[in-house]
Image (cartoon, rainbow, N blue to C red):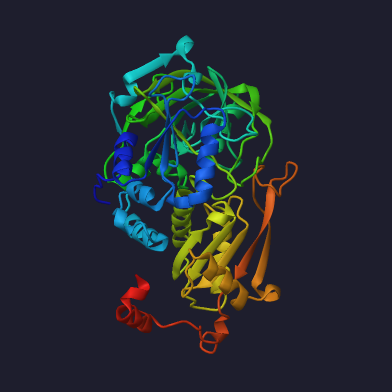
Length: 481
């Protein structure tokens, strides 16, 4: 992939672009205790992905310049800027996804370049001087179990067997000024790496970027194969090496233009309570449980640092659009990698919390094609984790348009013959329908395609042709504005 200097690896340069695009709203005086999260939720519930990025300053009890940010990539414009796309292309979700997919086809990972200087080293707190509550860490939801410093973040670990570095977005709660705790779902790459250390009785080195740049955040949200590091993937996205600094204690890399970085180790023996937390399901799912304690021994941060935040609620919310886009792109990657022919589009729908309702459109080529696509889509990343409903539609259906998808379900599928139930699938304690310690769920593949044997004889769609639509638009411009 060619170099793309429009993709920002510095949050402040990105914010300048967002402000120039008219989507940066500064808010002064909101309290860290529930108010920032409530302002963000109420606004996004009213305006959805037309809401601005919110930058909170003058937080009570904290010096001016200690800021919190919500909704970094929460609109088509901001996601386009984050991906280095032409903002003019931001009005059509499917077109954005197609454009992104064309670019990603030439993607080649570019390893980071290790540097020894960068803005994140403007301030370093060590050992006894560490106090992560010096930052205005929010209580994001009214019933959260505490203050969560890691939401729009990157948790960095290294596999002790292979040396592969992983960057994932996992929630991180503050226990006290020097201690944190993170919940990582079973099966996630960071959890697998962490547990290799802990099961051997060894502490797990960890770095947590809690003031993150757009390129690293997108990479951390993306689901990659085990042999690709997210930093390498981000470098491939930008077409240049990501500049990273190695932590003083762990040697783990982190971006030199990060806003706030925590470094420490996860204890193999000590736990602290974690949760509950308002999660992507729209519920306080999973309750509160003990999780391994994280001892924070270094804090690196810029002058006037920005804490990046992502509070999930019942849809819609401030980081749902980018979640759906990134997961849709990841699902296309997985289907392509599985060798499935003629997949024309996908969309992981916002109303399904960015996971539980997925539409895939195909050009049918053979008997069983639709069911094959749906079953594969139900099991591969990122939908393999806590998926629920997978709807396969024909290529005349726009998978991003929920009205189109439901119309196809209602007119091209029969519940008796076109619903395939799958059991004992990968789930999580965050799944509201899972109880106990058996973390399985079921899911359904809905074949909402025209029956393959009736493609030529199925009733015609009652819709104005493209040619006639263009003709009347040109003839009556006042009607169409």
